[in-house]
Amino acid sequence: MSKEPDRLFAQPLGQVPDFVFNEDVVRVFPDMIKRSVPGYPTIVENLGVLAAQFAQPDTALYDLGSSLGAVTQALRRHVRSEGCRVIAIDNSAAMVERCRQYLNAQDSMCQELLPVEVIEGDILALQFQPASVVAMNFTLQFIAPEQRLELLTRIRQSLLPGGALILSEKLRFVDDEEHALLTDLHVAFKRANGYSELEIAQKRSAIENVMKPDSLEEHRERLLAAGFSKVVPWFQCLNFASLIALP
Ligand SMILES: Nc1ncnc2c1ncn2[C@@H]1O[C@H](C[S@+](CC[C@H]([NH3+])C(=O)[O-])CC(=O)[O-])[C@@H](O)[C@H]1O
Ligand SMILES: O=C(O)C(=O)Cc1ccccc1
Image (cartoon, rainbow, N blue to C red; front, side, top):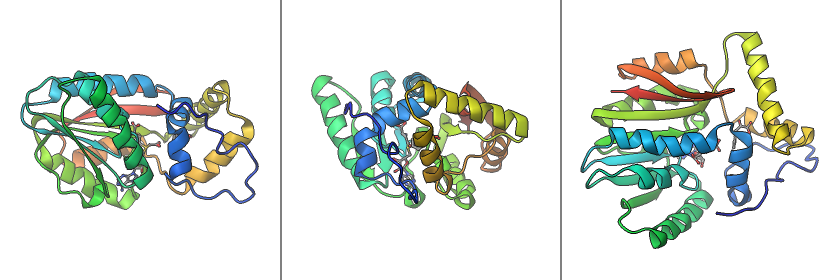
């Protein structure tokens, strides 16, 4: 894994451009996500543990918005069901290229890993195959809000009985005081991880037009509207949470 520290927003940028998953972000992404998302390493590793409980033989496991393949690697460390294959998809060419390199490195270090297909493409255009596990780790928040229900409905239709969607997201909160408190605490988390006030402010401007968090209530209602029968939060750290949605 690249050890390059995230300094993308350290210098004053004047007009801050919208955040894009380009080569510059790819270079620092492991550092950026670990220092920006409280609980990220715990979520990724345990996503593998959870997935192993839902994975069924001879089915697909999806990693939607795979970035550098951290979730795919966790699935390959934990899932032991026969005949499973992982399908990782991301629409950033830079992410996909580096993801393939990391997965090749994982292949050369461990034998008998689940086969993986890494697709450069849009999740919204994906033809889903019958799946036992669908992981969306911090990806739905980048999908246009008006497209989210249709996407979740298609995921629900691809899920086999006994399978699960595992959905991790940054949350907003309906209660203003709760929202302000957890947002302030997230800023404190970033500061404690070495980000300056300028870096925090410029990153906030960069993501505000491209990343639109929902509340837990919105997630629950939309998942039920998409046909899921049960929504169970299994992790929350500050304003970041992960849910299990059952078909
Ligand atoms: N329509 C789309 N189609 C495909 N990919 C998309 C789309 N929109 C955004 N992406 C991709 O979704 C990923 C979101 S990052 C996921 C982290 C990863 N899951 C991790 O556990 O390390 C989350 C974050 O950076 O906060 C990026 O790689 C985008 O290119
Ligand atoms: O940095 C933030 O404030 C976030 O909400 C998380 C994040 C992490 C990586 C890329 C974009 C957003």
